[in-house]
Each structure stands twice: as C-alpha cells, then as structure tokens.
Length: 149
Image (cartoon, rainbow, N blue to C red; front, side, top):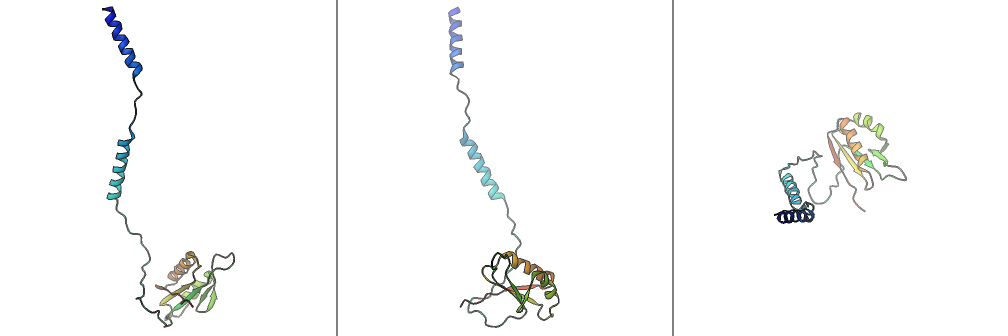
C-alpha cells in the first residue's frame, strides 16, 4: 500500500514538472480588434466640412469681357518674402490698407471682388484678402486667371 502511495506522489510530481506555462493565443484577440474596427467604420457618420461654395463658369472659351467690380492682382513673391505685391485696380496696396480701400470703394464697384493671383502665391495671402473683403462688406468674390501666352 505504501508503494501505491509513493507511485501516486511520483506521478503527481512528474505532472507538476511537466506543466507548461500558459500561453495566450493572439489570433482571437486580433479577430476581435478587426471586428471592432469594422463596426466603428460602418457605424460612424461623417459630417461634411463647411467650405466655400464655388460657381464654376461653363466650359468653353474664356470670356474676353473685362469683369465689373474691384480687381486685386497678386504677383508671385520675390526673394525671401512670403507675400506677393498686390494691385487693387492697378494701384499698389498693402494688406493693412486694403480694408479702408475696399470699404470706401464706390457702391457700383463694391458688388464683387475679383482676385487674380499668380501660381506661386501662397493660399494664406489669398484667404487674408478674402477675409478683408468680407469684413469690408463685399459678398461676392470671384477668381480670374490670366491666359497663358
């Protein structure tokens, strides 16, 4: 009987020694993460970002008519400058002076501002001109390009 008890102890001791450390399988966890990812992608709603409404001209030949309203021409920046030279109806103007010039413009010209910027002009300068025009009471802003020669 004592031998039987020793055999049981020895068998249990070998089982204890043979135990492997528990492992964690990553496959089910990855499956759960992908299912959650798909769930959130499907159930998420995206709201459209407010932007600027642009009315594009109809396709065809460019209009040769001179636009009515105020025209701001912005040249490419030169040297180390970040902003290009701005011309308001042919006269050089700085951004700080533009509000007063736009605000004091005749009402028939104040109906629309046309921005004609060259290719290398930073968007920041164009947006600042647009903001200044809105502050001066100009509601319609158009963009024009010069024909390539």
